[in-house]
Image: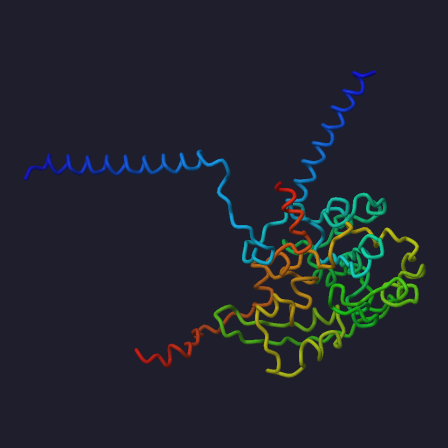
Length: 147
Length: 224
């Protein structure tokens, strides 16, 4: 019995080690999400929800920019639209299509709210972001990985 | 004076030089080995990591569960479509989404709606090229309205971003990189600003007799 416990412990610590190494490698690597994916985290984190991730590429195949940015009034600014679930349910912003008629409805929470918690609002892969710094990566995490 | 002596001197000096180099190398090596810690670089804040080379993406078009911004503890992440699945058959580029969206639209490979509900509504396309002379030696800019009006409506850009009047818009690359003017979309959603994409805008070669304009400081140089 004791032997089995010991073996279990060894296995568990090995697993933990492997996971930790992978995790640290992951931290030091650049994230490689699709160009123009937008993470929107105006209110999500504070409400205990994962941030929403908006894939431009997916929508661009189906709609021209004009539909959202002229007709629906989305501003050309990540996080600049102050979108809330109340507005979406009222048929504004995402809710203009995500109403169960044009596209799937809002009960599929986790389809949009699928971002890693704590990720700030940003445009993924924008030239400025790539030039200046990966602003979505907190410096503290980087420091922690070095220790 | 004899040739032999000269040769000897040359040889000995060469030997000395080699010895000195070896010594220096040893010192450096000893220094590196002797130090417990590797050379400490100054800690910089994220804002200071500017002007590094844009790294080539190792795994472009990664599926959502491998892309680093989607939470893998969220089951729905695995229900999202991987981009590559949707990009099958679309013309490729080497930047951004690695898809040439304009070409895909022109060739009818994608048929994005112009209206939220009506899939038959056609865009209001305006075919007008605007040539913007550039002061520097890079080719002049040609702005094609056609490609832009295929996707966008006039009010998306005019008059908030671009005043629809000749000479009314001051544009420079710094402003674009900081997200103003063309940079409202380019560098974020539409094609990125990379060395590979310069020529997409800077596409009109300078006239054969073009010479770079002399700077004021040169023209008024008192020490000329």
